[in-house]
Image 1: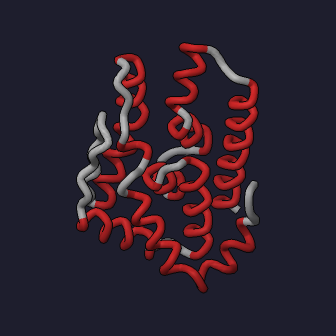
Image 2 (image 1 turned 120 degrees about the horizontal axis):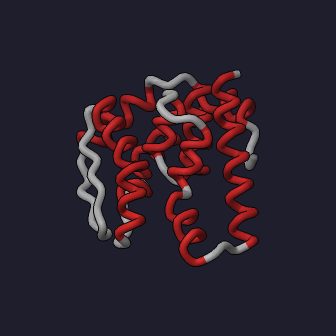
Amino acid sequence: MTFDLKQAAADIAADRDEIIDRLVKFSTTDMLLFWGNEKTLIERQNKIWNPIIKWVNDSMACHFKATHGLDVAENEEDGARVRHFLKSLSDKELAAFYAAALATRSVLLASALVRGKINAEQAFEAAYLEELWQAENWGSVEEAEKSRAERKKEIADIAAFLKS
């Protein structure tokens, strides 16, 4: 793991507002909002990512929408709702959320993981969906496999920390 979650949870109070600000900004460019163009990839994204986007939209009253381009409409109301959600988290949950958002490259996945909507395995598979799809279609690279294995362990450690 890149940092000590117990220490991060203890230190979170001092930087809580700054961390929340970063995460709110990050949510507008969330990985789950940028979909591929290949039919089989889109089918997989629809199956795995759409339920997470729908859950976040329903549970936070947001309006996140996926795109196949680089344009994502920024919605100030969504930012306010994400901020409200993040402020409701304990210091421990916020530390885990921050670590999960970094490990998965997604605030939406971090939300689902912290709230128990998905488990560590599901978070990993969703976070690395495109990489795994590419490896299946064009072959795997040893260095990429090693990196994904490290991220998978990191996500599992975050989930275990949440349960401790």
